[in-house]
Image (cartoon, rainbow, N blue to C red; front, side, top):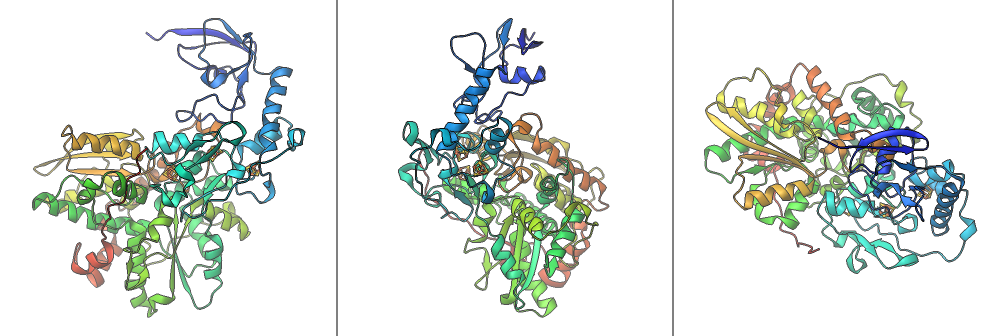
Amino acid sequence: MEQMIPLTIDGVRVEVPQGTTVLEASRKAGVKIPTLCYLKDINQSGSCRMCVVDTGARAFQAACVLPVTKDMVVRTNTPDLREARRVLLELILSNHNKQCLSCIRSQNCELQKLCKDLGVEDGNDFAGVMNQYEIDDFSPSIVRDNSKCIVCRRCVAACDKVQEVGVIGATGRGFKTSIASPWNLHLSEMACINCGQCITVCPVGALHEKDDTSLVWQYLADPTKHVVVQPAPAVRAALGEEFGLPMGTSVTGKMAAALRRMGFDRVFDTDFAADLTIMEEATELVDRVTNGGVLPMITSCSPGWIKFCEHYYPEFIPNLSSCKSPHEMEGALVKSYYAEKMGLDPKDIVVVSVMPCTAKKYEAQRPELSNGGLPDVDVVITTRELARMIKEAGIEFTMLPDEGFDDLLGESTGAGVIFGATGGVMEAALRTAYTFITGNELEDVNFTAVRGVEGIKEATVKVGDLDVSVAVVSSTSMAAKLLDAVKAGEKNYTFIEVMGCPGGCVNGGGQPIVDASVRAKVDIRTERAKALYNEDQAKTLRKSHLNPEIKKIYDEFLGRPNSHKAHKLLHTKYTVRPKYEK
Ligand code: SF4
Ligand code: SF4
Ligand code: SF4
């Protein structure tokens, strides 16, 4: 039985399980201890000392790494503690580029908030020499600005522990400590997978996505361009957070309305292409199973995962589905099927993807994701960038009426919607593979065994006479663990879904950034996924092969799944890339 430990925090008596830290126990006492480097389950090092508390010991101790002891008496709010925290903040600010007015994180910055809460103004008390840094903006996805870095090391922990990539770390000592890649190389020169998980954990403006909003405005103002937009499934589950709506609010209709008001010529939906991906991927799976192809087949819609596989597990490249990711499929069809229907020259069409993902910016630049010398997708912006554009345009987002997507490449089923959550692609694929294999329709389409946020999920699904063994993983560290087990012969699957970010695209590197104090209390992956599963549940059609626009595009244009034309437009290939040894 779990042993409970009694202690007193700021005069409040609480009991918590043995092994709990004082920081965690303080929540039970209704006390909020300030933190900065702490990030639940990811970074608990006590290095910034912001959470110091007084236990009567000779020195103040960091609450995030201090285990409770029986009858401990903790004080969190004394004049000396407040002064210690203020001095810490003053010291940080003395070597900080304090351009709050133009900073991308202004009003969503944990340092700025702490300074305001603790009454620290400018850091001039310790003014002196400041370190000078070059901004690393060579990556297509990530910008690093060390002049705003507070060396909390959250990004290092996310890159190393969550993603098992480890291309950034602390270098130098004392005042000269900074975060860098080995040999001070740019991120673009490393085996960085562009996932952006480092951005979502950074408390300040030291890491952000490459901003492509000006480029989109430029295209929208150009009368010679026909600008088409497509938002990914997970965007609708999180965009509302940027406008003060509760986490987990689905804003599909308002998002479509906002995109139209911004001036896009067509508002299509990547959910349509998610349904199309299922048609192609389920056909490929059935073909591999029945014709002795390479198994397990592994999904290919997460570009962070794909780059991880190319760098670190190239032996699994033959296992990757050859399907392009959904927004690339949609882009390829906009510049072929749609262009033909509308009598437009594909050279005059600009495809803008709104994605929850920073790696999609990199993906869109891959030369193989193009047709006739034109990229399938011209610009990728993240959910955060779309929110900034909506604000810049003066659109009152929460007041917008719900609108739908445009016909032809805008209709979707519930199967397309759930792509944004870990397990969603697997569930959508099984709904259709069942019909492809048995010729019958599934009655109950809910494959609950592959839902949820656990790092690795496994199930054996009966499809007609076949027992299909499947696994679902999210985050590249979990993918590595699973692939190691497959390599060692310990696990044997038919089909694996991998998403590069923990929890899938709902928690992608381009999604709204959530303060560490909120992340400690709420599972953002679960809350956002609920929005997608609710949308799936509410749809009349929940299987990709029943989408009328999907049927139409095969009838009128593609012929059948995996046809020669479908292969040319919707499938791709992969490249072995150098591995970076940590
Ligand atoms: S990181 Fe925070 S404190 Fe620093 S300039 Fe940006 S908003 Fe201001
Ligand atoms: S984008 Fe991902 S792989 Fe690259 S540095 Fe950040 S966490 Fe690491
Ligand atoms: S870049 Fe951000 S997350 Fe990384 S150490 Fe600096 S402040 Fe912390």
